[in-house]
Image 1 (cartoon, rainbow, N blue to C red):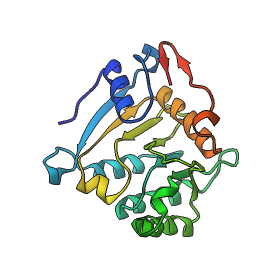
Image 2 (image 1 turned 45 degrees about the horizontal axis):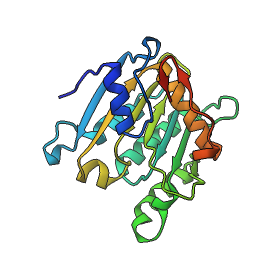
Image 3 (image 1 turned 180 degrees about the horizontal axis):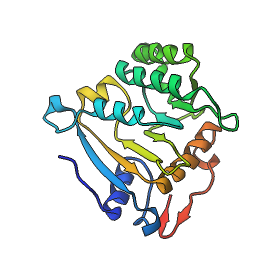
Image 4 (image 1 turned 180 degrees about the vertical axis):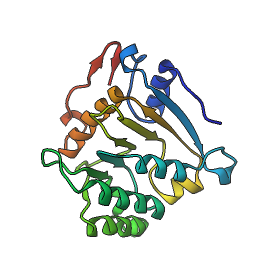
Length: 212
């Protein structure tokens, strides 16, 4: 069953999922819509996370940014390829419409074979992909669509975009429809795209009583 959450609960849940949002969000940053998802169905959970993720990706009309600790689920890759084809006709200030950052550790050795195949498909299609330039594991898992527009929205999940996390393990996620929250996550993504992690990242933002 989907839950509509208050902004205070959002702050706590976002911290648990790695979004680093501390304190209650001010009224100006409250989401137009917030939904919680719990999967997979095969483990007795109510939601098909792969289906919901594909719906989120398919809803992008201007841009899509993906920061993920692993990527190998084939139908998610199909959705990312479709988004790349759909959105890459034009560029905004030389910034690709679809950008993907993936943890480089997920590509190593035997366990990274499926991930390397997935990224090879995306690279062959011309998708903009970078690894995390980070000596430690990157566990920042979120997707961001249409940031900077009135339709800005974020998907923050406890797992990666892998078969293991989405179909074989119990995972949860939040869908947050809010232009304000989308702008915050875009600033974080832009830092990571430029190779700024940890102490190299820009200082956290304060919006009202929320520190991000």
